[in-house]
Amino acid sequence: MNHAIRFLQDGNRVKAVVQFRGREIAHADLGKKLLMRFAGDLTAYGTVEGMPRLEGRNAHILISPVKAAGKAAPAGPSAPADKAPPAAPAQP
Image 1 (cartoon, one colour):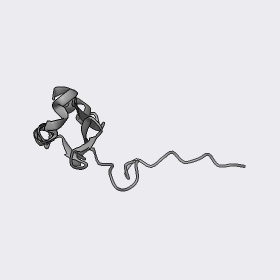
Image 2 (image 1 turned 180 degrees about the vertical axis):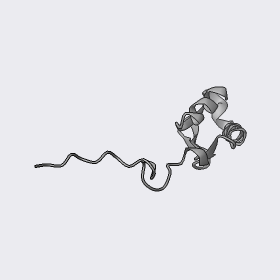
Image 3 (image 1 turned 60 degrees about the vertical axis):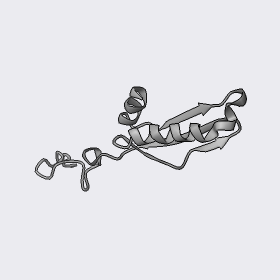
């Protein structure tokens, strides 16, 4: 859980996988519940891209980082308006 939080805070996506072995595949619903609980615990840090998917003997879920309002790029010119770039020297 702590690694997932750190990855999401760094702006990376997280893929959580539950691997079923042997007869465990008969209880795939428990694996999906576990993934949904994991995703629910991370709602403050990321959003779920879809429901848990079962592919073969693995169930997985993708979680994307939340877009923080403070990290948004400012709209407008990148240089402040009061500091204009230096004027080019005049050519003779």
